[in-house]
Image (cartoon, rainbow, N blue to C red; front, top):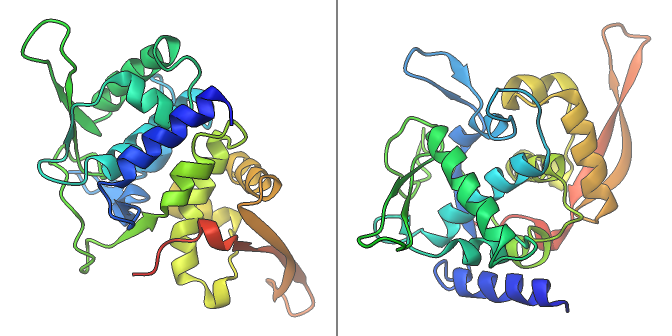
Length: 260
């Protein structure tokens, strides 16, 4: 185990004590929500874009997304705030040089998350003190984060702890792969027999994810062993004589969501 992997493992071990084996929750409104005007928004997809609103799935998008969902896991108790230094988060996410360059990446990512209404921050009491980071709701409404109830209108998914310990700090996981993994966790709970399909038009409408991100993410997850490609199903198309294939996937058990 390299020094960076050891730092990431130790950070994940420290963080998981807050969750008591339950993994990290995130609401379904993180995928699709409505703003104050009633317009449909896709908060998760918005984290992939840069500050100008273009691009997606790059290293910056992956770091922002992973940092936010990690905050929901680590700061799950009390007032849902974190006083941990940037170096802790850099180690948890497996960034290089967590005490130097990695910490600078984390501080920049917190600033972007605050601009996008996913977190709020407060300065320390004294100069140089660690800033307090407060989690805000997944729908970007600006409301303070609360533990989801699971009731109608407040449903949620859980990310297994092994994802933090074995997957999230890996450089092999791409930004699109992370996005499609979160979508897989939601789809898994709706799938019959654990078999999942990810139709292009549905992913675009329900999650605001481009087809290039969908394809790249699924390919990445299969390559690193998170998803298993089970083959292609045949479904009747627009006419009785036209058949179309859909790729069928299952989640590797260790990366499947914890039981309710």
